[in-house]
Length: 316
Image 1 (tube, rainbow, N blue to C red):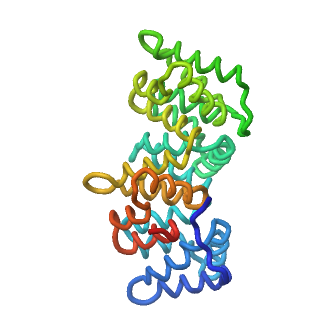
Image 2: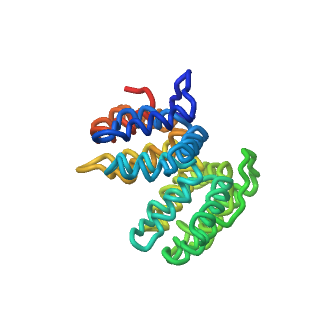
Image 3: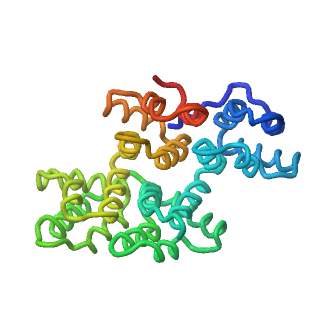
């Protein structure tokens, strides 16, 4: 469930484009006016506003926003202007570009998306960059982490709720044999099962593993693997069981301790607002006895804070 709030009476994309132009005129940008419009429009509406702005002022709205805004507000608003798949393609490309390699960010985006989302992202990735996602993974990732990512973006997984009990038990036993039962780890088995099985199936495997061996599959992954390979496996597993809980945990990590990891905060808030942010907020509250809105409020400031809180919707 999304947290995006859209006014009951909506102005036309043409009017929105005119109001944005007005906000850019004069001395300094009227940032509250920009936020008030853009943080309350869905992907289709944002695309129409951009179309109107281009037609009326012979200028790309995103280019103008980049000139008028700065810092974290600029990063968050520019990312928000894309539709979800375009946004994912941009995020992964940035994370896999030579000047700013961030394999953890690329892994989070790839391994938390559904098979149909990945198909769409791969198409856009290629049309935007003239290169294939697989090529960039091949170039920048390594070892078992690379093998898992390549398998994960290539496999066509079932997206429905049905699972086959016999295969579930077989996979649970195979993972035990490949990990905790032996000395060393058979990474190939982990890669195959985690990249080829549906979310519903993996969640069932996790439950079966626990009842067979009185130990969680998550703990087994942690003790048998490490680094980015471990992070990718855990992302796939946790998103199979409860994606909202996974993102709530990552948001908490981004805001705890000294200083805020704004890059992660922006990435998760902006990419999940139109998908499942309502559920993420519930999980965050449950785990930390504090609302996500309050956490974001205390870790951010100024117009940047206003923008993120607008996306998060009402909440205390």
